[in-house]
Length: 165
Image (cartoon, rainbow, N blue to C red; front, side, top):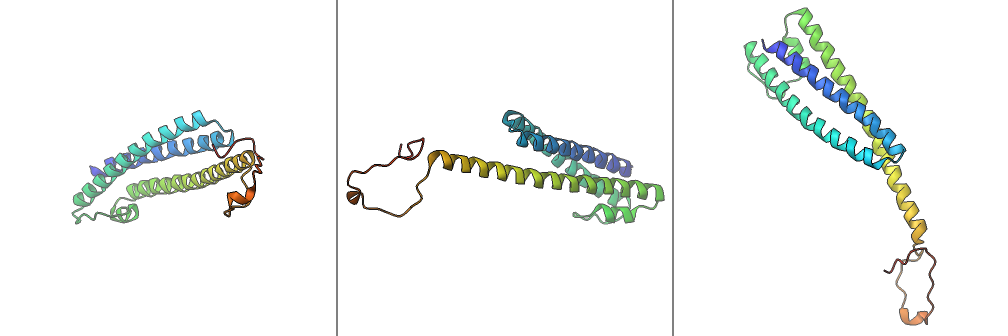
């Protein structure tokens, strides 16, 4: 029965998204505490889970297609869980499908919020690094061309690093 396989596939997909959410929360702490090695390891784990999610989503689409065929409905390529839910006759199965659909919606919304926060933290971190480098390099204020012949041998060096090197 393809409905059971579809539910199992959706549950597996939910578990993978939940794991991705856990890694996103860990990533937030790692960015805040500047633990770069752990952050890189977490990003690698996320990449592996994303590959698994792609495979799980492919399997879900196959089970949805099979379910449509079992229901003697012409399969649609881009069918939603809500549409599948309307095809189910059993109230219990419809409730199960609605529950997993809601769980998936909740976890993906949480994942979206965590990713937005992580993006903001990373942008702030990059801005801070750029600001720190600008302070260390003491970049010149004026970016216009000056004739070097008019300088008459005056050399000023205001920064810690020689930016001309």
